[in-house]
Every structure is written in structure tokens, then in C-alpha cells.
Length: 143
Image (tube, rainbow, N blue to C red; front, side, top):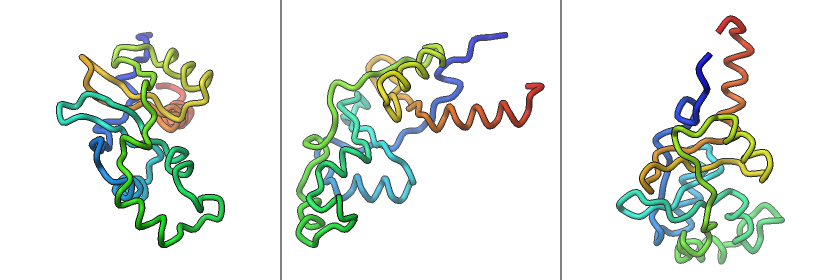
């Protein structure tokens, strides 16, 4: 049996924004795409950071009430992605064994890990990718 690699499970293309993208745009992208993570990249595709749904909530004044104030919604037009993103993000390569990526997700309680090649973002592997794989495998045991 061949070893399952990150490239076999990763999501691509990845939803991305630039470092000066307004937080409002990030939130809209997350909502429209039904995703919890957005990568922040340079024009060259080099990964700069990651914005999670948790990062967005942390940046919002009224996040606990579940409703954004009009003032906060207005501020989201001026807050830039680079001010909210997590820097120094743990990454993996397309040829990283999937088991290693799963252990990284679990041991650090990450929702995803960006996949890079030559410093450029090429995919994202998330807990959802592993659940999808488990569903496929369990649905077709002879696989």
C-alpha cells in the first residue's frame, strides 16, 4: 500500500487575500465560501500568514453578542488583513505524509495547515479534509 501524502488530501486552490485587504473582505470571503481559514499571501504567492474565524472574532468588539455594531462593521473596512493574521504559521509540504499532518493538526489543535512548495502556497490541509477522507474510506471499505 502506498503512503498517503498531503497532496492526496489537500484542498486547492486556496482562498487568499492580500496583506492590505480589508477585514470586511476577509469576512465576506469566509461567509460566501463557507470556510474558517483564509491565507494571506503576497502577489508572488508567498505565504505571509493565516486568518482564522477565531482571529476574526478576536478582532471584533461585539463578537460575544453575535451582532456587529454599526461602528465595528464600518471599522472592518479599514482594518487590514496583516493586522489580524497569525504570522509564523506552521506549514507542510505536498510530499509530507498525511499522518504527520494529522498529528500536527491534533497536537496543536489547529483547524488547518497551509501547504507550501518553494515558499509559495499550493494548498491547505484541514481537519475537514481528513473527515472527508474517513467518510470516503468507511463508505467503500474495499478501497
